[in-house]
Image (cartoon, rainbow over all chains, first blue to last red; front, side, top):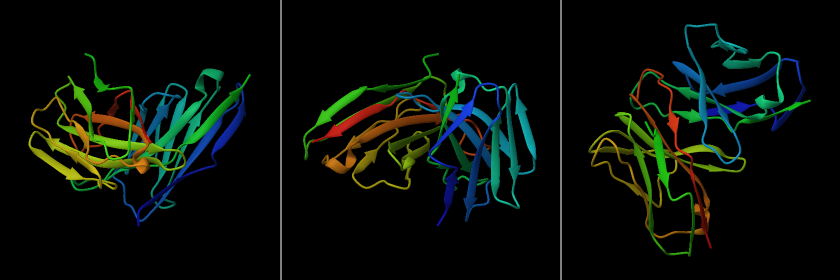
Length: 113
Length: 114
């Protein structure tokens, strides 16, 4: 069955350092991979999309990589700030209308001042 | 634009009761979906719709019904509530089903079934 895994339940990073979150998947050939941010008591908010033919995408302090051979995406936040503390979810999406979008369980990130 | 709105924010039901969770979007999005989020389980797709009059089942559809009579509204009905349906429910919409479009999520409904 399709499976998506995100690294560790919680990640503690010192302010100013780079936070790196991992998303691994099996039994899925995604055309797109998305990253969302979720704050406590709120719905997820879209951050970045990367396509299967793209290796890397950047947006301000965020960088996403996508390796379809390793079946892995890495999500980096550089110069991290306490305001970056949240849960980050990755999601896989296929090319076809019948493909189901699946979400990982998320990684809780704590940026320590 | 209000985006995606959900009502109610909180609800407590007794086992066996029924209710409807409301979801509306004002962005003229074609695709709408319902997820439930449980601790340690992540977001799981319940039902989705690719347009008015078209709905389909997701990963965990049992115990839930949906309909899509208009582009804007996508209510989720719990037929006979059970404690296993205690969860946080999110409605989401996006312009199209395919193409990797971002999903816009509502604020969620926290449901407790006793």
